[in-house]
Length: 205
Image (cartoon, rainbow, N blue to C red; front, top):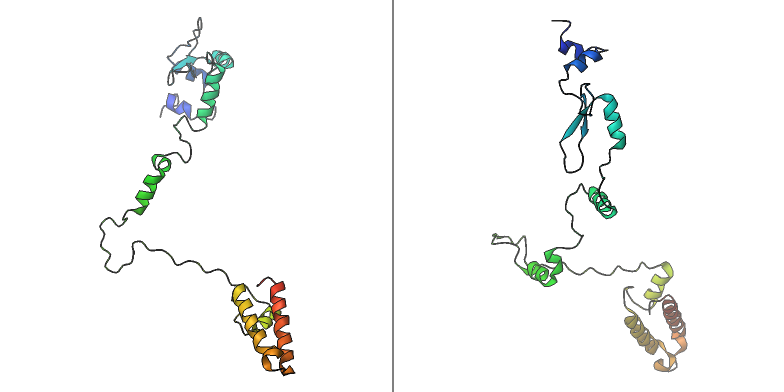
């Protein structure tokens, strides 16, 4: 290996800067400068990929005065900055597309047979299948509410009209006037009335 090789010199801890400058055959592009152009500087807008070659002093001077937006109006600069947010790629407003603008087309498309002629001998993908309607969540009964329903001989999931109807039936059944003046059912009648009033106050009927 030649110790004075330019390849060997590049991997030195302290490479010889003067030797590297001598290797550069490109002269500084600055007018009147005869030093090697060791540093590249962009030529500007609409000339992407083209560079000046300057020495270290002149590239610093060039960078201080360099302005990519030179010659552009305020509106053009604002539009460029807005486009730069998406990398100058085209964008579309969310929700704007041919199917979204034509709701009838969407409905017709959704109504088409999606199977596309696929055989389904086991009816795994039943066309026109609609899931069963979800049942309304049942109200959790507290102890006193459960007792009131039991007093009226009800299950606990009946609607308000069913509770009222059952209450009227029991009142007619246990009222003393319906029992020929028998006062033995007064306690039962009192429990029925109290149970109905409790359920009414709780919002069941």
